[in-house]
Length: 290
Ligand code: MN
Image (cartoon, rainbow, N blue to C red):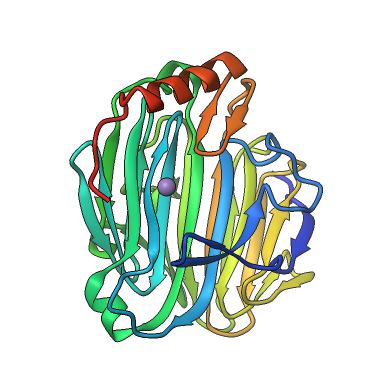
């Protein structure tokens, strides 16, 4: 196996607000030479770096909106977020928890700071990742996987742990079920600890440094809130914690199909996007109270 080289290490782009509750840096597709296919099957990665929200009696967030054709995955690092959708699923996730929502044929949902968190205020830090679905699964029924930190399989390492959210690490399988091969880990390392990862070379692969800083492949340094994109020229890479660190690692097999995306809908053709709008306006995504 050969080493996967680093294509770039990106500083967080200027943040913007999604609704009034998520102050995010967009890393995928982002502004750095990345088109929609570059990180397939990952369509979007919005990162709310650690940000203090003052107390609010009215929870901040994003009101009712639709999705079709993909999955939204929310990974909580700080703070608590509540989700409700038109398929009848709801849940609250907090530190270390993951919410894996398969919109597929279509849902309405809303995402707000959980009420008690909102009232108290506090640090908020989350990732929202959009994972594409292959054409054959885009119109399958919606699903919801609420995955607590306790449910997430842990693979112990010297000086650290790989929390396997999806896919597998070594012989440790992940907690979430996925439609295509996707590996998603939270990796926690004490200062000086190392971890190695290998994925097939054609799997699109990146990492986000959530806490601390990492040396990658013994050469480049990725500080807090930076995003490292890997080339598809090898299988393995290694990280070393320069201080206690937490990183999100993502790798997935590209879905080699056309992408037609518009706002909250990601399909294969413009006609399917048009159909999504028509179905949405015809009320076919169900009902959800504001
Ligand atoms: Mn959403």
